[in-house]
Length: 136
Ligand code: ATP
Ligand code: MG
Image: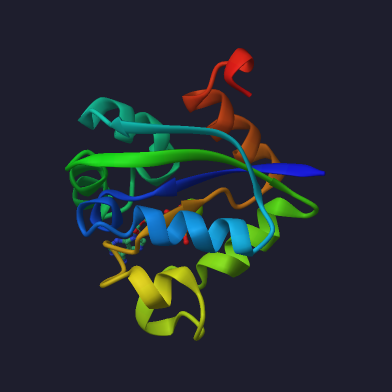
């Protein structure tokens, strides 16, 4: 079993799509191990995306991630990290494969509906950033 960290981003929550995305998470075979609705502060979003601090889109990204509540999730499945990346699809919804969450719920590369950890080390950092041991 493996765990990964996922976010239903503010665009999807605002559009009322969180329920549909959670249903897709369940039907894809993930078990939800922890879940919380949280409106991130600008500083919390900056800390989370610190690896992107030098990127030109960092301001836009952290504005967006702190623009409304997110659903924060710990998902568990065999090979959860890659499996969740596959379920989400490519970063840019216009390039995401048919049947993926970003294709169905994302509207632009910035407003792309979901986040997923990209490696075991980032999953460990991201789960620890948002969830206490007791919650997991
Ligand atoms: P995430 O980390 O959110 O799961 P990702 O791993 O597919 O997405 P990253 O390269 O880590 O992609 O980029 C983080 C986020 O920054 C993307 O999800 C996207 O919302 C935003 N982003 C990436 N590239 C751009 C860009 N060129 N312009 C605007 N926003 C971007
Ligand atoms: Mg990423």
